[in-house]
Amino acid sequence: MVDSPRSQPRVRRPGGRSARVRVAVLSATVDVLLDGGLDALSIGEVARRAGVHETSIYRRWGTRAGLALDAVLDRTQTEVPVPDTGALRTDLNALLHHAAAFSRTPLGELLLRMAVRENMAEYEEVRERFWHHRFAAGSAVLARAEQRGELRAGIDHRLVFEALMGPLHMRLLLTREPLDDAFLDGVVGLVLAGIAPQCRSAGTGCGEEDA
Image (cartoon, rainbow, N blue to C red; front, side, top):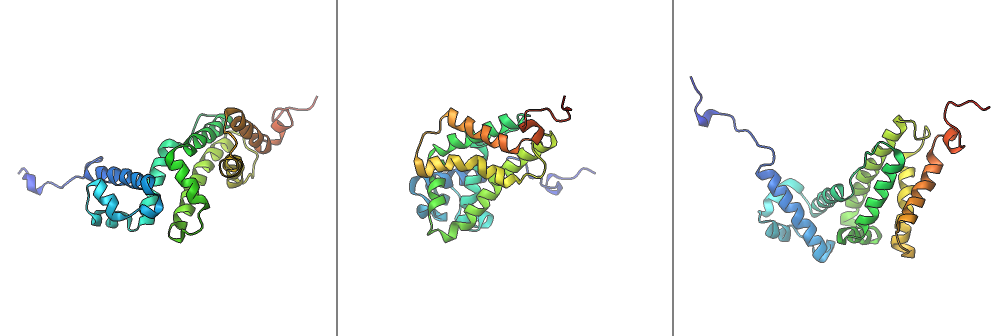
């Protein structure tokens, strides 16, 4: 006996309506943020621009803060991808150059303003969770390098990531000096000198015996 179409189980297709709604909502959220910043972000305005019901947004994201976090993470994962070039130097170089390029975009500039605002208790969790995700991305790069023997054992991954990104934000927020290739490459070289296995930093190959 052949099942009727009505008795067939309904299969949710990947990339279906749910995925389209998510894309539309996150895109609208970024647009609202860029137009008016965090203060202008409202579920109602995002719903209007995305062409969906407010209840759909509340059901999936719950709060403005949750919506903002998902939108920002979605965009940064695209514009600041986690590199996997097979070598630590080129991975760190790509990570820092992508971060510098993103900082010059409207959304990157908005995130910088968020970083220095103090009256944003509602979004404090957004800031913490955003950087938690970015630290995790940096740690993945360092974990692969550790497996390849390019990283000194016991190095604090978060501290390395902060050492890599700290000079970038120093120039963005304080000195306003240019983020040119020479500066970015110099930061990578300095970080590598501090985290390489001791035999490499001393100028000898690991496992080589002194003559």
